[in-house]
Image (cartoon, rainbow, N blue to C red):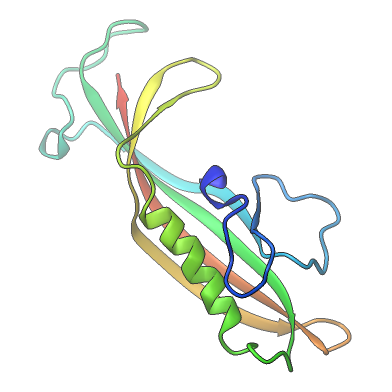
Length: 161
């Protein structure tokens, strides 16, 4: 998901979005929209009604079917903007809309490989279920606002276990 957001074109004349897993230190008031992507909650299940397998895996290298992992990925979108900017009331929602559009139109299914085990899996439904919350707060000098959005995106991963 970081790859979908990093460099994403932004509304108006803004530079492209910067996306990170681990935030740079420090990253205070920046001139570009920023996204921090973090895997939050996940549930793994062998659900026969959900396309899973009834067979139990008996050990490494003994595939028995598919299992599903439902990930809740949190995307923290941050932007600083003057409160009296001409587009102060609409630019940040436009930034959030651009990020949501990139997620909802991503490849589906998307094959991935675990970088540590080389195990293949498939991501599906990226951007099919998203929930967001936008908040505005003043910075110390009160001329600049910090705009934040917590965007939670459900992603399903099919593993072969």
